[in-house]
Amino acid sequence: AIENTVFPINHKNKPAHSSSVRPQPVPPLLQTLQRYLTALEPLLPPEELEHTRGIVQKFGCPGGLGENLQRELIKRAEHSHNWISDWWVQWAYLECRQPLAVHSNPAISLPKRDFTDWRGQLVFASKLIAGLLDFKAQVDSGRLGVEYMRGQPLCMELFPQLFSSCRIPGPKHDHVIHYGRPRRGPAHITVVRNYQFFQLDVYNSDGTPLTESQIHAQLLRIRSQSWKTDKQPMGILTSEHRHTWGQAYTRLLRDKINKESVRLIEKSIFTLCLDSPVMRISDEKYSSRMAAQILHGGGTFSNSGNRWFDKTLQFVVGEDGSWGLLYEHATAEGPPIATLLDHVLDYCKKPDRMRAPLIPLPMPKKLYFYINSEIKWDLEMAKQNLDILINDLDIKCFNFQRFGKDLVKQLKLSPNSFIQVAIQLAYYRVHSEVCAACDIASLRMFRGGRTDYIRSPTNQMLSFIRAFDDDAVSREAKVQLLREAVDAYSILTEQSLMGQGIDRHLLGLKLQAIEEGLSVPRIFMDTAYGLATHWKLRTGQVPANTDSVMCFGPLVPDGYAVCYNPQQDHVHFSITAFNCCEETNAEKLALTLERSLHDLQELFQPTV
Image (cartoon, rainbow, N blue to C red; front, side):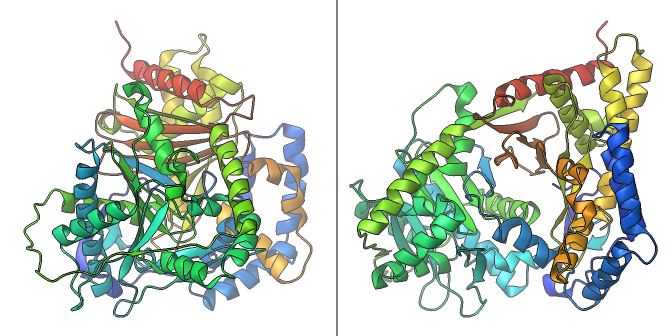
């Protein structure tokens, strides 16, 4: 979630390897501790805050534990590519045991294409594949222009890793394998239709990519070989709890045929999911249904068997014109994905001028699985568990059409910060309290940088929220409080983007202690730390040049995930919550957020 209104990303056509990206700094210890205490102020009653203040001061005192850990972190930074990214990926993703479906993999649902049957589906899918291969060629050859923010080059390291990579389940933690090498990497993609997987070679023998018409001919062949039968939805195994899938994976790979099929899926450049049409519903609910389809496939009787959730990149094209992508978070982040999508969308606007060579192509290879009684049992359990998870997830997507980022800019406010205040206001109106919330800041200004959190609420945000529905407070005072809240959040955003956020630093200090064999420092065992990192609001701005909407599940059982894509005169939102939690309700928060945005507009433009 890059604050693109303040720091627009632009491209320069210098090859990616020439960028000189700075190492990521380790923030000063006392600065982080002070900012941590400030972040706790809106969340804690005074006596609890005082208790925590004592713990924090002891941790940061001269010659104390904090100083020792900080010294080791600085040493680590001097001798590593990036002092926190590997730890972060391991801790946040690879050691997390929850299912990738809903809990981890983000989905992006894109505007419906103008086809409504399988013929249009395959024509568009061919164009999509050609566009992705064109982007990959730019990455492999070093022709992809370096991206810049505020005149600073951004780290481009994640781009080559998007292709031919896959997460592999393990008993205690997962790992990621990258098979892509520019000259000798895999030459095939995986296509899955009606739960059946195919290896599709996408390069000719001379190394040139297949043309759109060649790809289209091959997709027609795959369609003719994949009629709906009683095939087992093998992909659903990848939606399981990671420990469970790790055990099933070991059982699955005991068989030679299965091992070969799984390896071909893992090595493939990316996966294309050709989804069957879903039940028609009202226009109002269509965007929510489509986001759900991309995110998890809609269940075991729908398209969930057409996914391999461990795969870094999966593109979904439905027969009804719906399409989007799903990505695995250990390798991919939002900003590189947005760049890839922009390239593919531009490519899709161009006519296909390439003539197909008159060379007969080999038949796409169908991947087979041998299913014994153990694997059959694994599949039945995975189906049950995925359907329970899908039924528990409430998704509400809506397009707020009264205004977009242009109006907010005219008010000389940051659109991202403005929307963050609106989200906290809506949460407060529904739950009568503020909560720990995290937005995502990209750390690509630094070598190997991934992300940090931008925390809310701030003291200024809380003051505004409390005053906003109070009739005794004048309109002028409310406007001033809103400006202060927006400005405070913009400052936090800038701090995080500059590598001076608090959350990755605190995590680094904690993991450094664990690495040294020390007991976890008291600052991290304190109830305040637990409260401050129980993210009831997980938010993400996904600035894109198209009307896309991102969607992912909440981080905690009693929380929400709110994604938004601000356009010039409207804003797309998606909100998710779990039905099993009686307190949360995605529909209610969505309606309250719409009203809150409307009320904020009225604050500046009161109707006569």
